[in-house]
Image (cartoon, rainbow, N blue to C red; front, side, top):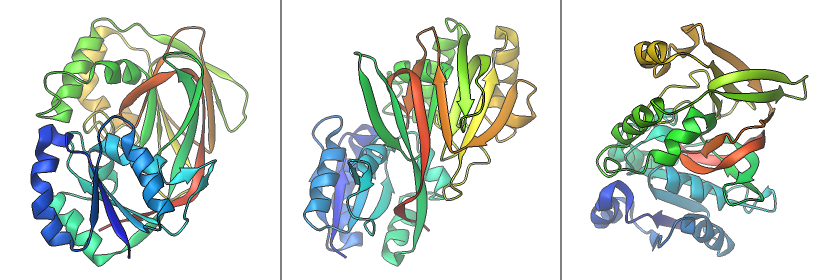
Length: 301
């Protein structure tokens, strides 16, 4: 297959750029393009697909993967429905690679060599930009709003280059002392609106966010559904005590956590409620999200 790699040279504190020459030796004939700015991977992926490349490798973290996925689409449709996405995870959070069952870089290289693919869903989401006006994009992993959105705003900190999980935990503690519960209106698959006072709501195609928080443990990449995890507001003492449970696959055992599935989700609020999409703080409510079934071919172990 005609293969190209989109390399984020800043991923993992510059380790992606340093390791790339060694990876090329293992991957064989691959054309590499290095990103130069935020959002660049999306533009590169679209250009490569227009040039006839049928296998695109995302070399970097969750942000690079998400940008690359967005480059697979134009005007609401795949540019090439048979094109494949491969992952060479070299970020610090590694949330989507957990759902994709890619344990490390060596396993990712072996998966690309073997060439097995799984056709998976993605999600399309519309939201309000921080600067005003509506925006739309795709996400492959997870979006959340409430405390998750506030944490994403603060997650680019002095720990980011060393450990995505540590950076998110630091941001979580920072937000913990200033976050106030938000009241939101939620509708699933067009059902009547319900009102919730929330700590956080997550919409998952994948299972993890925040550097390993298992927030949507029942999500599947190919079931045509989005997982919805609603965590009601809880006091500071309960949050501090129960954070390990809320960070684990046992989240639904917590009395303040609720589980649903839907193909379409709408949410709005009279307050400013921040959203994170695939780990990036991109905007605020209102949002509309919907699953796009069987939209992308992913190389898997």
